[in-house]
Image (tube, rainbow, N blue to C red; front, top):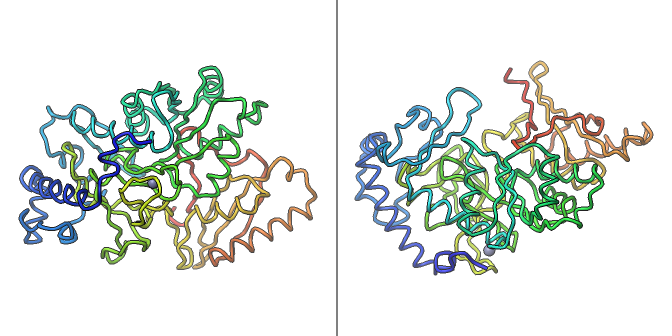
Length: 433
Ligand SMILES: [Zn+2]
């Protein structure tokens, strides 16, 4: 099932021709309409005519989140404010938010690729979509909303949180598709269990989860708890919002909609472009966006590109599931550690809940890692000696996976902070404070 077959299954040669034509047009536009980019081009001794091939993209300057902040709020907009019909912003950990603006055409394109993404995940016009992404400045809520409307599905704009109401609506309204963060999906699954509601008794079939990296083991856990097929969706407000890339029925990488975005993978240290298959930082160029077109935007997300043809028939490249973020990446004693690696180990062991917290401390000159892990109700009543053995087993597995000795602390079920709607705080890096 496709939403826009001629675009989604376009032969690669034709797709690349289209990309080049759109890239040239975009570069011209930002050079003339955005002083920030004109300055960057001039500093590098470049003019728009230097782009003749897709590979010429590699010569062009990058854009970073710092550039967006330095030009707060509207400095990178390529059109006057009267052409902007929507403004979103993402909260930064420090200081001012990152602001993005959309023209009417941007909103239509966003809805269209969101409709494509929902269909790729198994939704159709008969679907009842419970949208538990937050509505507001965050792009998740409205992004899914407009796409589901374009698709002709029935959208329930419930937004995040209020779990009792979510469950009541899920039951009474016959929700078939759930959209939210993966950590909230787990939370909802646990809440159903607590209420004694069998997920089989619901009409729920599909979940579309994103806005934070999650592992394949977490997918299994969600699919088991909610009795659904769980699809990963990728996006970021700077580029568009959710729907930049989606997992099709093959659930083996996310198709990135290349008629609107050009992906590259770079080495985050040397900034050199890496070949397909190698892991590095994802960089995206928007080639159709009018409001705030971005050239080679460094996402900080870590993944690789899979150029193999996909069984679903879509020709757009796939990015592999995110490994984490370059700025969430913990460097402990010189080793790169991603929270998703820890999550996989815990879920594979199967004896604990996928609720955990990583605490990094500096003792003297040595960094230490403590992992708090929630016990399941069954394990909690177990003998102390068995729990000590479990701690040792976890520590061993963590050591063989990441090569670091971690202190494991088993904690009571339900005692770690939960994410209701938003992203979970899984890392406490006390070295910075
Ligand atoms: Zn596919």
